[in-house]
Length: 160
Image (cartoon, rainbow, N blue to C red):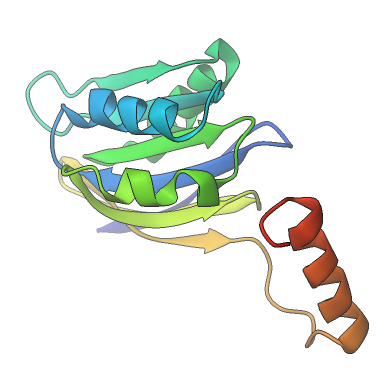
C-alpha cells in the first residue's frame, strides 16, 4: 500500500467540491443538480469511472473549468471520485443539491482554499482517504474579526 498527496490545481478564484459516487449516471445527475441550483452557473465536472472502460467522464458549462476538473480527476485517479470546479458560485449554493443526488455517497470537501487529497494505492486500485483543506488555525478570532465575519456574510448576501 502506498500513500500519496495530490495537490489540486484550480483557477485562483474557483471553488472545488470533491466527492465520491457509485454510478456512471452521476455525471448527468450532478450536472442537472448544478444547473438547476444556480442560473448561468459556470462549472466543470469530472468523474472517475471504476469499472468497464475506467474512463474519466466529464461535462460542464465552461470549457476551462471542465479541463481543470479533468486534470484534477486524472491526478487523483481514484475510483468513483468526482470533482466539481465552480467558477461563479460558492459551494454553499449547490452542496445540498449535490448531496441529494442519489448516486453521491460522500462529499470529502467543498472549498476555495488550496486543497491536497490524500490518496492510497493498493494493487490496481486507488482511493481517497481524506483531504487537507487550507491551513491550520493561526489563532482565535477577536471581536473585530467577528465584526468583519458578520460584514462579509452580508456583503456576500448570505445574511441581512
